[in-house]
Amino acid sequence: MSQQQRVIESNYFDHWCREVSRQPYRQFLRHRPHYRRLRAEYRETVTPPLAPLLKHKPPDRLGSVTLLLDLEGTLLTSKRLTESGGDDWTGWEAMQKHHGADLILLLPETPVSFKRHKYVVYKRPGLDRFLLELDRLGFECVAYSSATLQLASCLVSQVDRDGIIASVLARKACTWTGPSAQPLLFKDIDAIGRDPARTVLIDDWPLGCSDSANLLQVPTFSTGSNEWQFGQSNAESTLSASAELPLNRLLTVLERLAEWTGDVRDFLSKADCVANYRSGLATAAAASN
Image 1 (cartoon, rainbow, N blue to C red):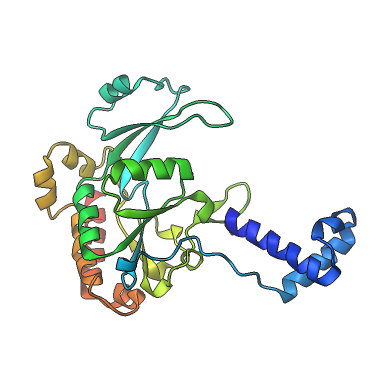
Image 2: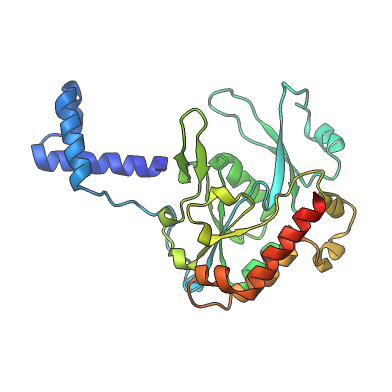
């Protein structure tokens, strides 16, 4: 349950207590046994409505498929420049050190440490063309990241200068699961306010989705990979024409998906172009190993 949904659930419980006992639930916190009984009764009888994380679709995207785009490892890769690692440089020094970086981000001061953290960011080769094609095909594009909202919003505003990505969902929109010592974050498609039958998550991590039937996986992008080296050594015109880039291969699938009017889960499980795409990923992964 996200932080926003916890607040909604708490307010709904408070309203329910007022209806049942004519007092807000905070009055019962002094009497723990009675509070626990009241809480148990509430959970057995009431299911609070969950507010959707996204607002209504834009009018020109009402019938379109919603693409949830992961950031780190999917559209880009980033590295925090930390003082402890000796990497707390000025923007110019960082650019010289990280030759070929697309961005050097300087985030505002945090309320805890009062430091302005720096990030060096590398866009995935072919990303600019990829986003323009998504817009041309009529998809609703939403960034869905496990990073903080501050970092995710800053990344999107810098790599998407044309405003193609309409909304940003960040860590508080993810669901926590697993042990408290090592919790896992996954993206809950049912909670975002879009029809799962018309929603696809594009992510490099197969375990990060609440329903794998909605997942379209891409290989992880990182510095030092063959893809990154290819992007550093070629001009943008070469990248746009290259059929070897994962984003360009993914576009061949999304072009067919844009024409699909049924359940996207049927498309992802049955379409030949998806099977060929996944087979190509498996072959490329085996070759790299």
